[in-house]
Length: 131
Image 1 (cartoon, one colour):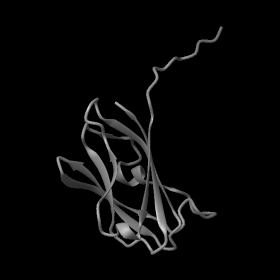
Image 2 (image 1 turned 180 degrees about the vertical axis):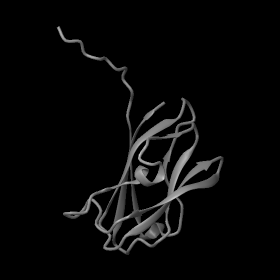
Image 3 (image 1 turned 120 degrees about the vertical axis):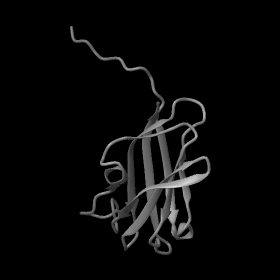
């Protein structure tokens, strides 16, 4: 008889964020790790865009109200939204493709450092789990 591994139920973290031209040059909260618990493990952060130009996003950790930049990622034009252009894995550039942990009360923020074109959107999706 085959044995199945039984994992404890861990509620997933699934967060979406739309970045538009109204957000150009400003920090935008993507996710805040809950105050209670042990933090959050970010497993995947992907970007999809309908912009006709590449857009660079600066990512930062917000710790106690202070932004600490962790890197800049360029989301290609049409990423994940047109044939032949794959969605962009932000953690590939921000954390060498590895998962990233956020401490309790720590936030993940993004800021467009090149402008999102008017009437265009970059959609971000975070998948993770509480620690």
